[in-house]
Amino acid sequence: MKTYEIKVLGTGMYAPKKIVTNVDLESIVETNDQWIYERTGIRQRHISSTEGGEFPTDMAYHATIDALKAANIEANDIDLILFGSCTPDVKLPNSASILQVKLGMTNNCACLDIAAACSGFVYGFNMATAMIQTGMIKKALIVGSEMLSREVNWKDRNSCILFGDGCGVAIIGRAEEGSESKVYSSVLTADGTGGEFFDQPIGGAVTPLTASHIEEGSHFMQMKGKEMFKVATRTLAENAQKVITEAGLSLEDIDWVVPHQANIRIIETTAKLIGIDMDKMIVNIQNYGNTSAATVPIAFHEAIVEGKIKRGDIVLFDAFGAGLTAGATLLKY
Ligand SMILES: CC(C)(COP(=O)(O)OP(=O)(O)OC[C@H]1O[C@@H](n2cnc3c(N)ncnc32)[C@H](O)[C@@H]1OP(=O)(O)O)[C@@H](O)C(=O)NCCC(=O)NCCS
Image 1 (cartoon, helix red, strand yellow):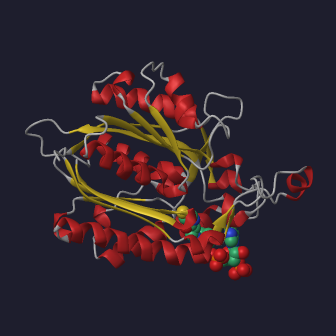
Image 2: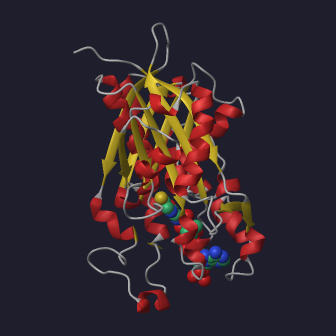
Image 3: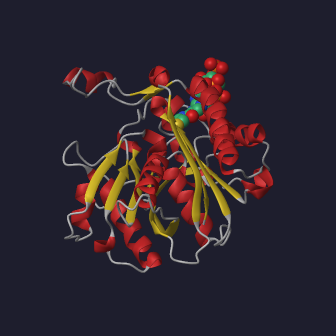
């Protein structure tokens, strides 16, 4: 069977206009800028307007328009939209289909949401890669877009300080003849036994949302931070090593790692475990906090725009999230 190489054709991002600093949070929960910065590396996060215009598919629309320009293609050239989010606009229809309409697409392309929490973008990237490599489709739009501010408990200082809203996207397609761009290797994993470390059990088929849940505040996301921390570092390091080994490359070959931005200490520990210099880790958690599925594509896009990641660089995506899902991708940009 003929297979095709992959090229990242364009990227984009959207960050909500409203910025909430650590100091702003001091008036919401008992916390302080120093604690948050020292324990997490976060200085501020962006928070979507609840009035409209910055819901997950709105942010995805803006980010995609920029990515289409960068890729120099039309929306109707896209064969597949994979939308990673754990905070979709609505339960039905899926966010990918809503985005298709917002983009004015008329080609009836395939639309699927990916519920893999913080790993959603990398899950989508690897799945779309396989579909392009085998010739099933030519171009895919992969989105990570989240409005976590709706789902965190703003009375719980253990979790609300960590998260932010935002969106990042990438359009990938067949690499043209003579292009060096490619995906070397990829891995997707999950360990469902750790599901309780980060969950939101209220509001689904088992326990539909009631007024008393809202009164108690039990319907929000709940996280066991310490447990997540330990598994995250181990898994991120293991998956990074897996894709590097599978590609037959060495650590010295890697130009950049784009890790999930959950905590600067997770990123530092992961770098140590992999054995890679912190200078090669793309870090922007200070500006956005943890935007779940959006962290990797936002960090990737910013690094491209800032001129850090250049054509020909070897880049490693490394994500981990609730589920416990995880994924890594090793590619030549
Ligand atoms: C949440 C996290 C920042 C907490 O950091 P930590 O160093 O483990 O902190 P602890 O939970 O041990 O808390 C230390 C103390 O600070 C307090 N504290 C917790 N949140 C606080 C806050 N926002 N401000 C001030 N103090 C806070 C705790 O109550 C505790 O006080 P105590 O010692 O009197 O009990 C960290 O565990 C983390 O980032 N975990 C992973 C998060 C993650 O991975 N999320 C998603 C992955 S996809």
